[in-house]
Amino acid sequence: MENSVEMRTWLDDLGLDHPLVIAGPCSAETEEQVLGIAKALKDTDVNYFRAGIWKPRTRPGNFEGVGALGLKWLQKVKAETGMKTATEVANKDHVKLALEHDIDLLWIGARSTVSPFIIQEIADELKGTDKIVLVKNPVNPDLSLWLGAIERLYTADIKKLGVIHRGFSTYEKTKYRNIPEWQLAIELQQKYPDLPLICDPSHITGKRDMIFDVSQTALDLNYDGLMIETHTDPDNAWSDAAQQVTPTTLVQIMKDLRIRKETVAGEDYNSTIAQLRAQIDVIDNQLIETLGKRMKVAKDIGELKKTKNVAVLQNNRWNEILGKMILEGEQKGLSEEFVLKMFKAIHQESINHQEKILKA
Image 1: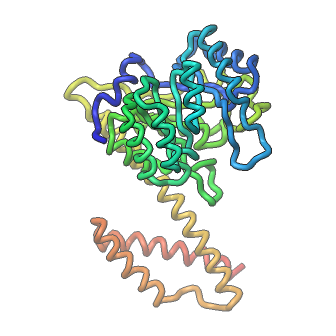
Image 2: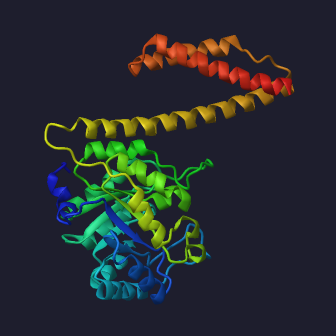
Image 3: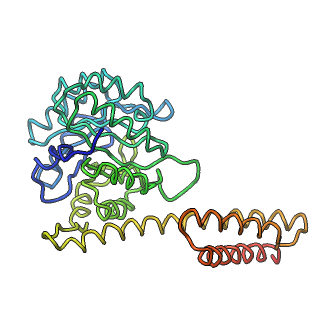
């Protein structure tokens, strides 16, 4: 698959003066709920009304969606509000039903993207469609799987393609529900700059009070739009209550977001440097998080040394680390002087943490 400006045609044809916005409830619960939210979003900058119809959960026993009945509710949304509709499809039967009910935008979820078998089945059923199809990143941080899903759809003559970045699962506890791993999305964006890239801050954060910050980061990184879960009574939502916002909050988020303006020809410096600096900010945050994890391990080592009455400083181990990192740094274009300064500072911080434990 080659990058082509044709990838952006469907997005450009919308003629938007703001980022694309896809919003609506995590799950369609009742006809009244769906229509109520849609009417609350009708006169906003929301471009597509989303609602999950089929909602298989990680573990059984929770609400798993109303099924095909919800597609009729989405039809009513379009008829009564004029809003275009969107839902997730996870197999060929979902695709067939969604097309029969004239759903305007279909997306493929993270759990489906991990399986080439599922993607191929969906691609075969969608072959040649003029509907918009967006692909969420796979659950695990695997760029090849994400690209592979896009390529299978592109090969099926599906031209209105885009991707959704919803973060990646991790066994570690972090402030995110799904860690962003922004660098993977940036790498995809650099490989296919004309492929529309949408951010799903709801699933990245899992918390409504973090949605604005993640949305702003996405726009700073030149994303094309946002998918934000919205509910008129989010605290009582049947699924993912903590990450949904009210329509009023959504409107305020969109109002407060800083949109990077297009610059005139020959004056693109500010635009370009803003995007590059946003990438630096993401990487710096990753560095701090990684260093925090390293210091936690250093503390664990300190606890072990305390129980065994072992000295904090282990010169042989330190020299081994330093030599290895100097060689690694050279391969990455880092000077020996820089690597020495950086790791001496890291080493000193580790010693400080361990000494505190020994003295406690």
